[in-house]
Amino acid sequence: MDRRARGLALVGLGVLVIVGTLAVGAVTAPDRSVTDGDGRQTLVGSQGGGTGWHDYGSVYLVDSDATAWREDSADSYFDVTMLPNGSVMAGFMHSGYEEGCGPYETPCTKTGFRIVDPDADGGPRVVSEHAFPVRSEGNSEVHDVERLSSGEYLMTDMDAERLVAVRGGEVTWEWRASELYTAPEDPTRRDWLHINDVDVINESHYLVSVRNANQLVVVERGAGAVEVINADRGGSDDSCLVRGEQLVPDAEGDVRCGDPDVLNHQHNPQWLGDGAVLVADSDNDRVVELHRTESGEWEPAWTLERAGGIQLDWPRDADRLANGNTLVTDTLNTRIFEIDRNGTVVWSTKTPRIPYEAERLPEGERVGGQRYS
Image 1 (cartoon, one colour):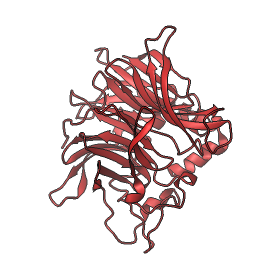
Image 2: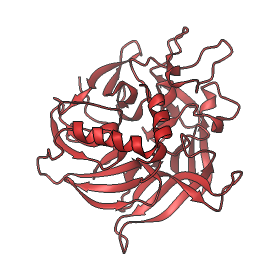
Image 3: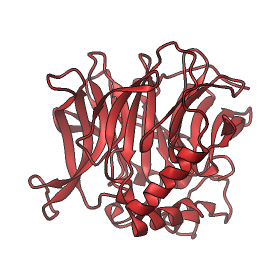
Image 4: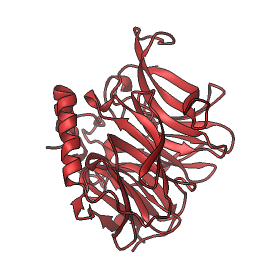
């Protein structure tokens, strides 16, 4: 069953299917207590696990193998980052808003990012929120937010399929994917590109994950797209349409999409340095490290398909850590684990619901890292 069919099944059967999925993950997952006892701290953004995967979301901290704190006031949380002052920034989606719904009827759904103070009196609480209304609670969320050195916040707006920077609630810059991809008349009415991640390479260049096109795009601020990883090689192979007809053909009937054997509906790439990127290759059920060849093509140089004797199942995050190991969020196996470069699991923990992304503290997701060959 492909991911789209699985998603439709989840919507149709709701919580019953989710519970079954999590039960299978719990049965097949390896020993969750694997640890070398050095007090690892891992910040987790959990999408949740209710109907359509949009209930019971939370942000929490795992200290070794125990939950130190949790904030769970949103339907779903996604990418999480600990800021220098100890607060946590997280992309989120929540329904039930009675005000500020714009063109949509109340109660409406909003998405954006929140700042959580884990040390607040009475326990972790949301101290600020930047949010805007969206047409649908599915495939419209802000999955990632980055704080720029300028003081701006850079978000992936999946509803309008754009990158957008804000400061003080005002838009300061944006890049619309329609500059590169053929757009539908109204992107908010379909799951068109599903832009799900942006990382800051440097002050002017951002790495963007365009999930439905199987591509990563390097966007230069002020110049637009300057490089496409897993670029369309031309011809009539429109294999990106395996999930349905989200992409829009150009005048010749072709869509811009990459080779699914290289990337297939990926999440959360990490820029390891010029010519290398680490990616959670979700629909291929693996983690892959891509290297740029002398010809300019990007090819797999290292892959991880199993860990602890278990096949990965729709991983959605992989971070190369400062110690050279790799931290993986294995979504449908409901586990987060750390492996060394030989593939040995050195730490693992079970997640109570569907995790989206994890970051090892205090380093977070780094720009640059050791390459595997």
